[in-house]
Image 1 (spheres, helix red, strand yellow):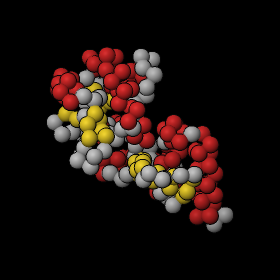
Image 2: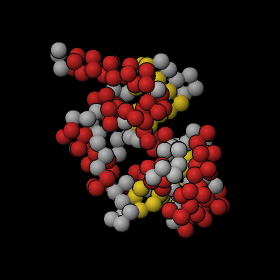
Image 3: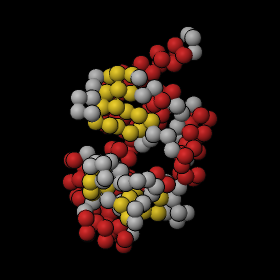
Image 4: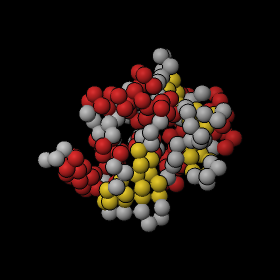
Length: 194
């Protein structure tokens, strides 16, 4: 475990390798799961502001869910999460011609139509952040649907934290990430007996 300020970072985030391979997984992480993507309270307003821009990219079923319960709900654990369709798809999913699931919010952001990228928990995946009140725990969420990403990460020798540099900086700041980079480099040297 690595401690930086008020965060505890699992060594898996430093040691394990990861590189998304959408051609293999087809974005299934936005479809499978027990509930929607975890949200920060302030992200709900961002999602609501995005609706007019992304509405036509959403499925009719997703539009119905949003009309009925909104963009978010509290799951059985009491966590604030994105609304989902039929117990699986996030309401913000859209599909491209080859059936790959994409995020309508990210699509609009990349097209310059939105300033909000997407929920930070989605941007950080496969890192999951748990708020314990006085500290945050960052853990690597291993899931069989990401096996191809683990294999590609091994081939590229890309640790999880480096793959997720941008969202980690977005969530915790540049100075925090720089500290993680320094600690991870030292940890790697120790593991290799340097």
